[in-house]
Length: 408
Image (cartoon, rainbow, N blue to C red):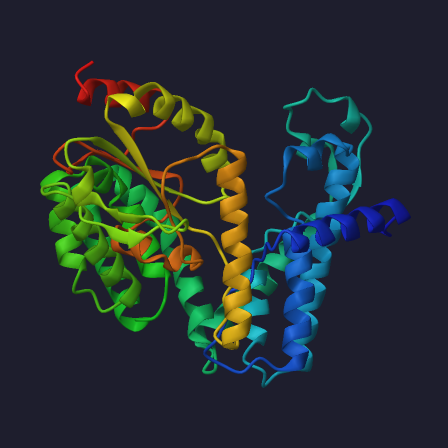
């Protein structure tokens, strides 16, 4: 099916918007050199894959069902063309395997046209019944992609990041099923994850798989979670072991007063020991975090209501100065100054008088790493002795908990 001019323009606009937002679907392979040809292929492949989603509500509001389906079909066609052409033309380039990985993940619809009535469907109706599909091409593709997958699994020059991702795709759904079936099903799956952790000590997949397998146990907390993290703290995978140690630190912090000492971005000296006798909110946040900003009016209200009665806030800002290993000292200083200005301007505008920790290191913020912060906003509410009372006091719960602790 030929692209219309509208389809081409929409594709280019959407891809440009996604790239401008810094989104990417690539693995960021570092274990092998990336040739100029591979870099070009990956950029083109990423642009096409981004069109498959996820997308904002505005994306859907401005397009007809026909346009949406056509954009997806064109993107699928582009992905197959890009990956197959590189695989055939660069048989010795190890980055051909990331293209092949994308092919094994793709489920193209082979839509060649649309039946009348597609645009008249109710808003939430499934439009697929109105697609004209090339069933022969779809069946042929299943055989083709099976061959690609077999070649990937047998490849001798596959970057470990690519193979790790393939094994993640193999296990993710079975692990979800095992997690629902209960303890008897967990053991065999854990052994498979153990194998991945040992095989890819620098990878990120094992942590995601352990977290998915034991999601219910981790949510419940208590002795079971502590036992699991204790076992994983000596895991051969670096990310798993680091996360486990941080989680154990957080568990330990709930048993004794939290300790934290730093110089705030405005020069104030902060030592949590000086806050003993007060209820304290440790707020992990950032100016770039939408949910953090959405939570801010509630935090400010609670502060206004209870500050004079013994409530304090300490901000831990995960600002991103975008520091890079190759930066000169002057470049690093300029980036940090710019990020610090963003933070100071924001807190002044929003009238946030409490102290803020700042180092510009984003997720490498030392307190975020120490306390296993993997998403923000994250909030530790401390009682008058400095111990963590809850890490879930958001929304209306924050005010209620502060009031309770202050015995008001």
